[in-house]
Image (cartoon, rainbow, N blue to C red):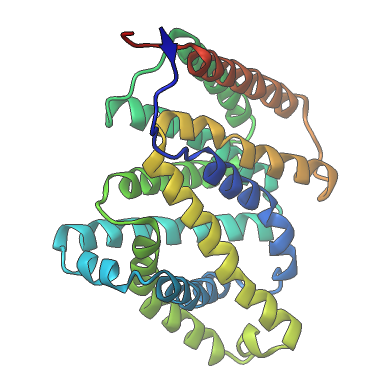
Length: 302
């Protein structure tokens, strides 16, 4: 007799798709705040993320979870590390977009899924099928081709890939919920973020937050656009194999890549097109294998 398993845990796929679509479209938002220096913008981004998280914590009545996590030294130390990694990731990404390195940022998040797959395999003990290893090989080859032609900006791509890959691993393994974890991360970063904002406020040009109403509102929006996809990602990371989550992540850099091509009008080189085709072929193989295994009926005793 063949049946599907009952009471299966909720899928992390919708949360993963939502997070990666928002991140893929983020360069369009960064155009609105392109006059804000990267360091200052990341500072304001952190400052406005915390109150948004606290509002949701209050609505969901999760302050007890936050307090419980703060009472666990191991959890707090892990969140200190993850907060540092995500701050580095934000800073490098914003700087790259503001300085016109769209493809370098895209490449970083093309490399990131490979980091996720390797971490999932060698750290978490997840197993890949032969077809999935074929997909990994194809994607790695595509990234290697593109990286060879972008050595001057490769540091951007590698920093983005390793910082976010390690951040996701830490969030997957730490014993704290998605929202309490992000709230604590934001609180950890609040003091240095406030220091950065104060530094720019004392400069002759003054704080970007006081330039005009629309720019101030755009800066505040950064808190929402930071918290929402990170919450979705944390939910997905806890519900999905890290290797699978990694391959779904190809969605975000592909959106960024297309924005660079059609919106920001960056020149597309043949080597970049070759990489794009190889990675999407790899993604098609990986998704096909996932679908084939999920469609296979689970045998149970009658």
